[in-house]
Length: 244
Image (cartoon, rainbow, N blue to C red; front, top):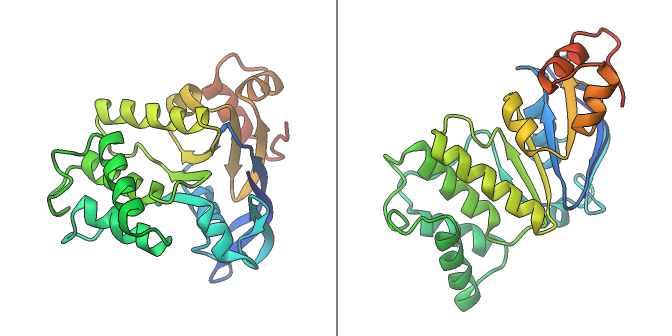
């Protein structure tokens, strides 16, 4: 479970996140939705400990991301907005490197590497250097790296951005698999069709503030709109916002 409470973060006196609160439950897919510049990525970066909140708090399975950073990190697998891959390493080397950082070694590590290569159908390129990879191959490498320590919470920042149709379908299938395994899945997106297809719960952020928090049906019913896209527009178009 991931909990955010009154998160606030500014850069050079400009507030990127002003007041974001929500809970992402285990066995559910929670989507963070909002227009460009709403504060989605900054919120995720605070959750996965890259940024320290100026105010507010966040917890991962009960571990405070500031006071108990290492314990929170061990409970998360993260796909950042920039994959941050090393061009001279192969996918296997990426997975192995991150596995060692999480304390895996020897036969247990190699089994996990092999299992992830098979799970993500990476056999054809697992031993090639990442330089020159397609977007889909880079995504699979980054996902495998994030999953090597078998985290209970998976955080994904716009996981299908730039992917072709088949890679997008594969990514969505994997996200649903995480949910079915009982993991807490939290991802950001600005693609309405993706949110509608995947999410059990939706958090809408606009101008750095949580303006809606509920199920897709909640969002539609409370805005009086028949489809999710119209409901989203109604929420972010309101000066006061809407708490479901």
